[in-house]
Every structure is written in C-alpha cells, then in structure tokens.
Length: 340
Image (cartoon, rainbow, N blue to C red; front, top):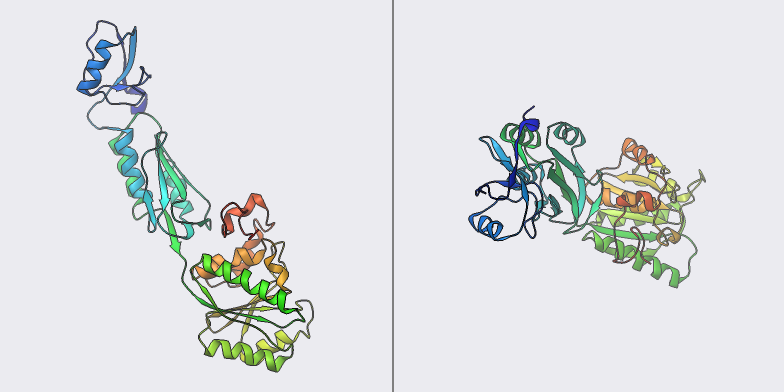
C-alpha cells in the first residue's frame, strides 16, 4: 500500500537538509509534521543534533494540514464552521445554537477511507454558539490525493450540521390548586428555558380544572397565536382527567400518553393542528432535568414529535449525566437541563 511506501529518511549530521522535507521527530522548537522552510534549514544547520528523521513529499502527497483543512470543509454542513488546527486536528464549531444533525451512515463510510478520522457529538446534541461539535484529523503526516478526493466525495454537502432553533410564542396554563408563589416560580422557570431557544412566554395563568374552561383556554391560546402550549396539573393516569376531555372538545390529537423517559414519564404530547400541546402533572417538572427538557429542543427545532419519534426517546431514556448531551445548557456552571 502507498501509505507503507512513503519515503522516510534518516539524515546524519553533515548531510544536506533541504526545504520541503517533513520532520517526523521533534527537533527543539521545530515540531514533528512541520514542512521545513529555508529559515528552518538555516536554524537546523546552526543547531546541535546527531540525526534527523524526515519524510520526502512525492507527487500526489498532501500534507496533513492542507488535507485536514479540505476534509473539515467537506464535513462541515450548515451551521458548522472550521476552527484553527489544534493538536493536529481541525475542530468543527457550531456557528449557531441548535441541534446537531449527523449523517451517521456517511460518517461511518467516510471513516473507511485510509489515513483519516472524523468524529462528532451524537445526533441530537444540543449545541450553543462556539461549541466544538466534532473534529477531523489526518492520521499520518501526509496522505494521498486519491484518498482525500474519495473522502471529499463521501462528505460532499456536509455530514455534520447544526439545525437552528425556531423562535416560538408559548402559553403556560396551570389547572391545579397551586399557590400564586408556586405559579410565579413555574412561570419564571419556563420562561428561562424558552429564552434559551430564543422563544418567549406570552401567557401564564391559572385555569379552572373543568373541560369547558380548559378547552376554551387552549382554543383561545391557539387563536391568539400560541405555537406551543404547556398544561400543568394533568392527572395522566386518570381516564376522566378533564384535560383529556378538553383535548377532545378542541379537536386535538394525542400522539403519546406518557413518554419513555425518566424522570418525566407522565408527560404527554398532543397536537392541535400543527401546535404541540404538552401536559405535565405539576410545576415540579421544572425542578430538575426531565423528559420535557429532552422534548423541548426537538420541538424548538421544528420537529413534529409523533408516536414513533417519542418511542425512540427510550434509547437513553434514563435522564442522567451520562445522557445529558440531549439536554440544553440553560445556565453556565449548572448541569445540563437544570436551572440550579
């Protein structure tokens, strides 16, 4: 194979050192992988050394820096930029806040090409501006043009994207017996979470816990332009829950009664036309990271959470630090998905 036939040499002291050679071993401040310039050659001539390990570039060879830059540019899709080389790899940077969208099949195919490595955060990772969402690296000091072109063809159009969050107007309706202080705390918490996505809370109010009042409230929020409605106080396990009756009255469709994730299993998701209507048992859903914090980023990215999509949340459904990549970092210095 060509990668095994790269022309490596050991130059003894007294032999000529020429510009264009690639160092394969550090020499003082000159680090391995460096393509020697005229100035480097003069510095080497003046230095004390016994031997040098170098690589001679041949026609069709591409140095790791230029190859890595080209590969990174091919892998980076919409919402992703390429940062400066760091430790031999090129970081893929989120240019905007959003969800990482990863073409896993093409990423795996790309990594079958010799001499390179490309890797990224999982699909669905919640990224903020400036986050490193992936990296690419050329493994040897040089690769072949034919390898690089094959990789560029595989990655054409981008493999790693960041899908932006869509600003939305939301409504927060509480239909449980709750103190005004608790209602205000829930309102503030929901508003802060919405703000992370660039969305805003238009309405936060208590509603009588009967089907007529609830249906009128939901219908009124839809007419007022709400794009997301959260109902708190739902008795999810009670078939006579007035919220469920209210959904029937307004013509909403239940997608999933319960979410396969914990905590927050009792969350339900319905749709009134294109408007997601969510139901949770109590304002306590804001006190920790729950299934709501897994669902919100997807809704805010414009996804429709149908039954199949909700069922897929079961993989990684135990919401813990090990699966927190799917949760928004609402506050700096606080675990993902939490406000305190």
